[in-house]
Image (cartoon, rainbow, N blue to C red; front, side, top):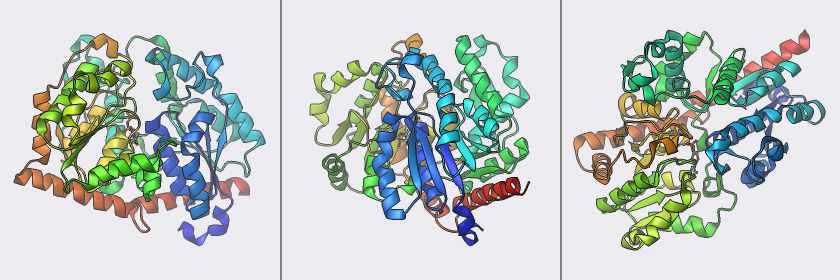
Length: 507
Ligand code: UDP
């Protein structure tokens, strides 16, 4: 394995190009850190404001682990793409109407990245690991004849569902009016039923022709990739990993996760995604969690984008209040943020729950909170990172999916690995379409209470669920340590690129 060839590893240079959105950049930075700890050089290419978010953590990585990891910045083309200055990531866009502009900005970064590779990266990249949502990297890699590996941001269950639905064309049988039609995803080890409207935008493309073209370009660019890296681990979904490898006819699918476990000390956990996080705030949360018994606190957070309507969020808040259990509720939200931020104080909610509830109105140190033993349930939107972070912390999930891959993740969690409970969301509200759905409430406060009690209450089934998720958490911790499957997969990836580079040199 790779440990026997440290000198050769010295010459390897992996370049990471992450999408600028927390759910994409955070796991790629974690993955980059894991790789750099194996004695290979790693460069993360990003824009100035994104770089600031994780600079401190990478500086520590260099000093503590002697990692050869660096950030190289390219300008974000704000004015060229019509995006206000100061916004360099999806979550900071003032409106989702700018989604198209954001994709334009990504494509405008092609030339500066090419310049960088040509003139500044030393040694020349051995491999580029990039987010699939930046399809111009396919052209960059072809130009420089460098293998490109896709980071998809999801799991193999997801990849297989999408692959099988797409290949079988089952969705083509339904018209747009058939949103409620139940589709059985073909060719899976489990019987997975989904409503058409709950499937990702690949199967619900909407009407914006420019965005449709962007998605087609992304799909087209996936062809010809050297391989795929996945933030998941084999012990969690082995049948799906093997089946996905089989259907795409390629063993170059490397499960390397859960990558967030690379953040071991509290400072790394607290600062992940938020450079401004201070010890004072960290201590406040830890002190609060320390004051409650093991497994008693609910953590509710609907991701970095949080697109739930204010009325629905209020129902969640009132549900949390009704449980009489302690909680941490993250109210961070881009969608109609101002309305929502006033509600807890104007309505008296904050005052009523102050003895047992903490509201976080900005960025939460999620992995720090989840890893605290007082957390007993995680109400999540089922973004894949959050889902995996909950599992790796041994915390059962309450699932509140909204769009993209989230309904798939709910199925994986509730039906396949059985460590979570549905809260009862039926309808997807696709990213950027929130206004079309108005203020609709899908989940009442009573349903919130039921789901929480179903996870945190007493009883054999609940106990077994808690045990199961703890077992997965142990497997997750072991898998990234020496000898674990994700650790070994990372070795295989390095070995593969090493062989590739050697062959190119010989020829
Ligand atoms: N996150 C966080 N604090 C927040 C919100 C999100 O640390 O207040 C992190 C979370 O730990 C996860 C990522 O942001 O790693 C969100 O990714 P996910 O795939 O769960 O959802 P998305 O935000 O992409 O919808």
